[in-house]
Image (cartoon, one colour):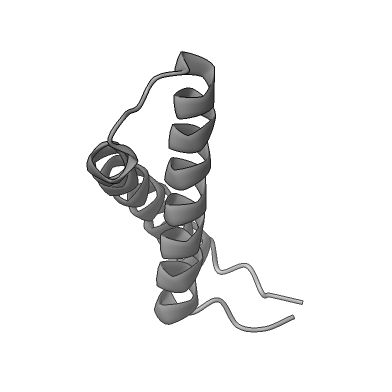
Length: 72
């Protein structure tokens, strides 16, 4: 298993946030059946997903580092 670094966590978070917000807005636009500005609606969700995921992931990383659990 690869070492869990801050850079890898950041990459994972950005990819997750982008994919989640774009797919969510596309599904919402298809459901509404009207023209919506997807690009304007994606950014708030992307920022929220990114901040929330970063807080959780770095919090978990901090807790795991304090527990001194060896990674396999």
